[in-house]
Length: 186
Image (cartoon, rainbow, N blue to C red; front, side, top):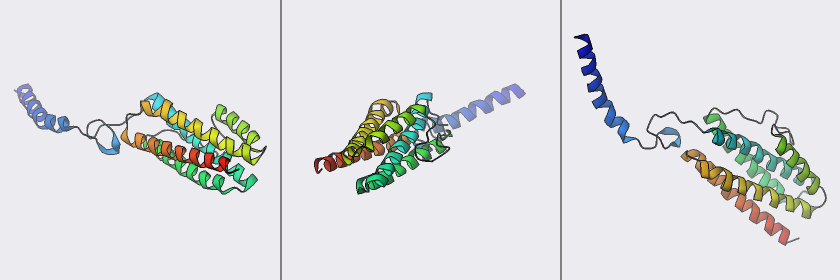
């Protein structure tokens, strides 16, 4: 008798809960799964966000160094924008429980050795002249655009991540245009 009552209770519960689950929709956090679903990232998505956090730091650090060297306003303005980009990606890392690779925010310090090497080469080129520094800005923005547009966005499945990456991409295109314009006026 207890088993029969338990089965009846489970069937009734299934009829009550099933329509609620079937509604689905976008749950909290911008995921594309049913309401209340736990949102997780793939390993690639997590690695992309972790890399992007430091790539935005690389841009900020280089632009700060170029501003200090040349005093040209474009580097100061865009470094502030790169800080906002870092903060946006940092918020996603927090939300998805990912470890922040920026343990030491000292300019030029990176957990990713490849980015550390790229930073050093960009600083060396930028130190040659203002024209070289502006070309470094072009190179950074082209790298950012490629990484976001080609390597990251096609794999995104979360609306919030897609929104942040799309905003960063638009910013990088704006920065690219600004550096092109600045170079044309030299």
